[in-house]
Structure formats: structure tokens, C-alpha cells
Length: 269
Image (cartoon, rainbow, N blue to C red; front, side, top):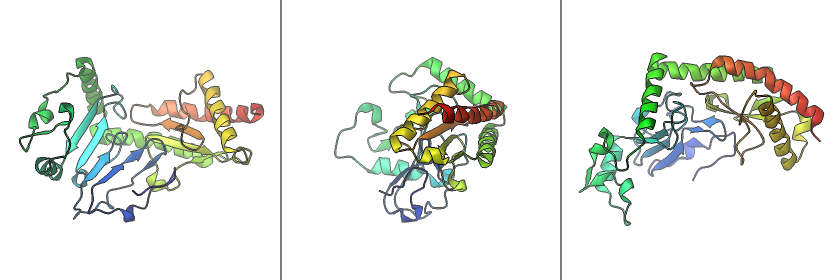
């Protein structure tokens, strides 16, 4: 396993492509994303298995290099949670058809029968019946995405939203990105850290309390809801900037961050 601290990418050059590689394209808890697919070997023996949950419809993915891709309706499309999508490359299908696990699989996880892919799964057949309201909702979301320019329009909206936050952070004297390298900063789940010395001088527990107090101040004013950092990540803020967010709303939020931080410095003990 190749790992890294919050705000950093692991050493992608250390990945062994003789083996299957499971990775997340965009880390919602750390605000770090894979910048491109150049590190994925063209002559790989293993499969590139990618969780692209908060990247699909917001980032340009090298589909030709990804063998297994998963994502949800919820994230960038803003549709219902608990519904996932799966894309398989020919290499992944070949693996499924030629590998028999040593343990039994529940029916809901089976994708082959008699050594062949159950193609009906990818043509609308279901094992367990999903909510038709949820299906109608995601169809509406896709129609909306098409109306704003499709994939290119969705990516452009996320990029524009991220730039609003980036411009604010660049001018700020108390806030910075958790992700250290610009090329690997997420454009959807943007994680920020407080860099002011009075805050960094606090111990870890008090930093968490201060960041939570800041989030509460903003929520009380109705300026932002649930923008605290992930519970295991360094104390700070996490702002969703996917395509379903309006740029004007993010622009309106930025002065509130300064206001909230000024109030925090006056009141936090």
C-alpha cells in the first residue's frame, strides 16, 4: 500500500502495475486529486480500479486508462445518495470471466454466470428493484447537465467555482489550501486550513474546537452549513464547489469567512 498524509499525494511512481491498483481519483476528505493519468502504465498487468465518486462529471478522466470506475449519482450530479454506477473495461471483463473466487459471492455482487459477463446488468436489468423516483431524479439531473453544456459545461462550472475560492485564499492572510500542490488540488471538495499563528500555536484539540466554533458561527448566520473539515482530517474548512453550486453563492460566502474568523478570534478562549 502506498499512502500519504492529508494534503499530499502518495508517490505515484512507487505504484507496482504488475498488481491491481485501487485508488481514489478525488479525495473528498483531504481536498487532493490525481492530476492526470500519466502515472498509469499503458502496459500494466494489473487493473486500474478507480473510485471516481466526486470526480465524474467534474474532472476530465482518462477513461482509456481506467479498467474499473465507480461513482455515485449523489456527488457532482446532486441526485440521490446510495446509488452507484460501474464502468468496466474489456480487461476488467476478461478478468471477471476468467477468475473464480475461492469463496461464494452473494447474488447482488455476481456479475458473471457460467464464465460469461451478465450483460443485462449493464442494460437496465436489476437484481434488487431501485426506487423509480430516484431514477427519475437522476434523469432530471442528466437533462440539466446537458442543458448547461454537458460534460464540458459541468467541468467548467466546477473549475469556475474553485477559482472563486482560490482567489480568496490567495488574498487571505489566515487561510490556505490543505493540498500543498496546485496541480493536485480538488476542484469539488476544497479543503482549507487556518494558518494564522494564534491558531497554529493551539494544541490539536483546541484547534479542532476553534474550527468547530467557526463553522457554528457561520451556520448560525445562515451563511454556510456543514463546512467543517472531515473528522479525522486536520482542523479547518471543507467547501463543496461542484457544478450544482452557483458561483454567485460561493462569491457571497467568501466575505462571511473573513467575518466569521474575525469573530472567532475575538471570542475563542
